[in-house]
Image 1 (tube, rainbow, N blue to C red):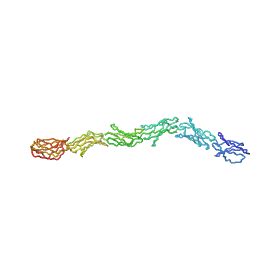
Image 2: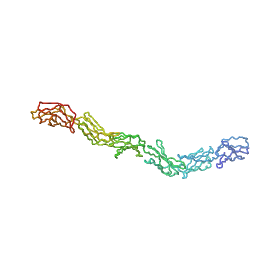
Image 3: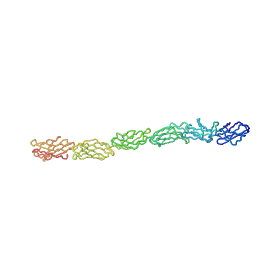
Image 4: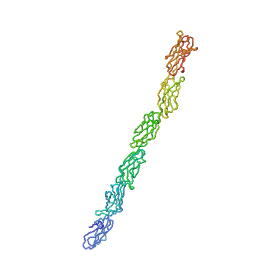
Length: 533
């Protein structure tokens, strides 16, 4: 049998002596070919010079046996384990995994790595090769690592001690606060209690792949160059001696919405529809229109259009769209100006030119008007209009139909939009002259005569006048279509005239021929003439 002294790596071999032998030799032969031996005349000896970490086959020969070659035996003994050499410790900073490595002396032994922290926390790791990983070491601690080889019988000397820090502990209570004015996010954190840290680094990543980072030696830093309309997830890592430790638990924050673009306005009278392209990150929108007079109109929506109602006429509105979300509510588009339609002209007044069947309409100017159009409509198919420039306050029309009541209104013209119609006023044109005038008399009956006619449209009343060459004049008035004239002279040739009297103007018609007094009845009919005073 053979026994190993672990301290000296010496093998003691014992055997049973054979008859006639007076000298023995004990052999230890390793699997890699190394041999060591000892001689004895008794039944035991000790073999020195064994190599560590080897498995030796043990054989004993005697002088009575002529044996030149010793090939080994089935009796095996493992030598003392080798000491681990050149031990190192390598840290994976982000995972806090420590890999301890050494130079392997033999494959025929196992190893134990011991880790001891300065705070008294110990851990071990077993390996059959030349390295072993610690997965759960405490963060932010100074550890010492030592490696010991062992077999099922012996333990080697401990390797030289390796001392190193584990990864710094991740910060806690991480927060993110966006400043809507500066568009920066303040990232704050609290140092871990066991932190051995030289700096901190914050990294923010958006769902669209945008990244931003900042670092500081304190407990906060500002993230800038953030992209609008994004939701970021931010983590903070503690750094010690160039080693960034595990990341903190992530926190999320949203940046301000992007600026609304492509703002357009559709306007009709007092209502404007404002439209825009969707702004990334916006939850809702506010549209605000401010007039040069100070008037404000607004609307809100979560779509991409909104109606502004109650806009005033003759105003220049500055329209802006504001995008809002939970983070910020002050992202404003470029200004879109809107000139509303001019206000309808006021103080509409009309006047007639009686002898020309013409009329003039006047008005009070409207702000932002570039011109005016006045309309005349007698509702019987006759229509007329006239125009004025932005500096004019009246215009005239000719060729009005006699005996008509015209509706008159004015519209102000704008650069892009026109006003609604002004209030409507009525204008009564010159009455049409009477026609088919007849006159008759009887000198024996009080020297009287009767004048009759067919009515003229638009006449309020009539006046019939008889004039003789000698200068004698007589007349009668009525609102009917005939009247009696008295005190006529006999043997005169009277001219017969009938006037149609209107609200503002009159028209006159003459009977063809004359009325001769003192004779039988004469009747004459005249065609219609142009109106005159």
